[in-house]
Image (cartoon, rainbow, N blue to C red):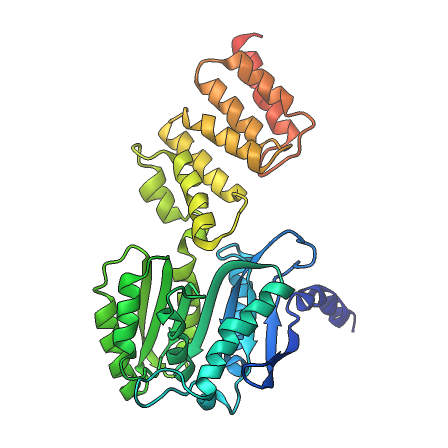
Length: 381
């Protein structure tokens, strides 16, 4: 019993993070009420100034949980931003929701109303009720996957990311998608997945679409395609969702060992400029102002030490002071700059000035004072 209580004490805080909200939304377009599942980011209430991208998941009755769970997992490790995930339940009505006309193959009847419900009602209400950022992703599977691409055909699409899980493509949809992605003027992420054991008729159309999309030359398009081995129409979902999320937020992830070795250790590259450009790109692409992570600062620090490009510390300590004011991070980088550019006495004083500042990473008062003492001993100050 004691072990059970201990286990519950450990798990209960985690369970509170995973709580899901169930809401109803009344739609004038549909003339009915629709059921939603909503996962808010961890500590949403505490971070009162923070805004979050939105992920709309069709077939929310079975797709919501895998999408929401993976986004929560990736954002916990800072591989993606935290996001608001909204699932629309469509159990038993997905065919009506995704109906298209037989003449022009565009949404019709209930399908047209459902299209307007998402684009004109749901997103507007989410923006009013929650702190949303201007970056949206939509996810669908077979019929609903075909449906999500109708938003791509609008002049100013309301979604920037499209996760297509084995789409059941309407006639002309492949050509329409290709034309839209070839000419898109805003950054767009498009993911497409099938599998070796996918439904043959669907796979034929998906492979044909991939042949068209992989030849598009448009810098605004970020396209990824997966053909999973030994997966079915249903099991591919579990493999595709993480692949799609990773591809859409590649630049958001912390600096990888591969980037460190292949980019930062090249003497022709400015590590500090690389860091600044990485976070500027995150803001431009996703509309998110993100604090530079301590791990990324440490990656740049190690690269400077390896390449002995000491001038890089000038920009780095300014960025560190901006992102982590009151800590020892900027102080340490500034002292290293002075130490390696012929100003040991100034470096010693800067190390000493760290006394009273907040510790961060491996930097604490003892370490900084030891650095100051080492200079004092070496130079006899």
